[in-house]
Amino acid sequence: MIPMLQAALLVRAANESSAGAPAPTAPCRADGSEPVAPAAHLVARPRGVVHVAVSPLTPSGRFIPVTARTVCRTHTRRLAVVPRSRAVDVFRYRRVCVRCIKALLPTAPGVDGTPLPRDVEAQLYSFLTIPNLHAVLRSCTTVDQTHMVGRLALMLFGPKTMRPPARRSQGQAAVADLHDAIHKTRARLVAETRTPEERAALRQQRDTQVFNDALTARQRKRAAAVDKALERARRGGFLTPYERQLVDSA
Ligand SMILES: [Zn+2]
View 1 (cartoon, rainbow, N blue to C red):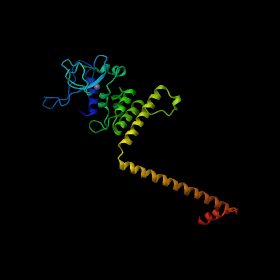
View 2: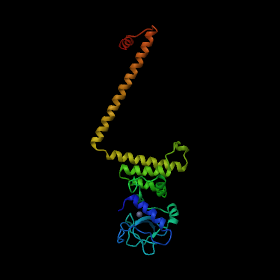
View 3: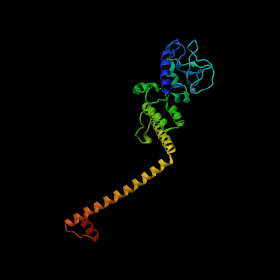
View 4: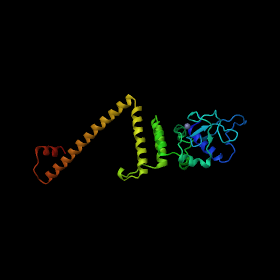
């Protein structure tokens, strides 16, 4: 399959060019024979789920061939191409196939190695909803994928609100839930992907930290006691044997 981001860009290009009747032109070889990669399109049954298909179109330019498959390999009857003019409505009111969305997830950096401008990327994925991202998150199997979803969530819906749960609006609560779910999934995947050696190293590191913290606390307490004893000695006050010992050692 063509790279994911490239597919997303092709969908955009295809939608932009399929506003009118003419079929989107697929990139061709120099000699003009076979297309290198057919363009990707948003396709759907009437009022059905929206999929992504990477396929040439029928001569009318309005459908993909019956034999063509969507990115998610769903078997379905003839799928119509969603014109650019209706794409926004389609994404707002219709279900978008999650497996096809996954194929559109950004792979940083961009197609030719340069990162995409933020606004271009935001525009590219503006059709994603919070339930869409939850669905993508549920199918994440690597930590990197959770970072992708997290980046999308931040870009499209902003950071988690600082307001306490009781004072959040419905929208803020939904975004906060999404961020929480992303962190939870990531923490689970991070723990799952650790090797026994890494786990042992982590335990060792934690033990050392606990020891060092205790040592620092003891030293601080002793320094404070010495200061107090010195101050009392300066004033000519009574010193306990322990305090005398502290003053002598200072
Ligand atoms: Zn699909």
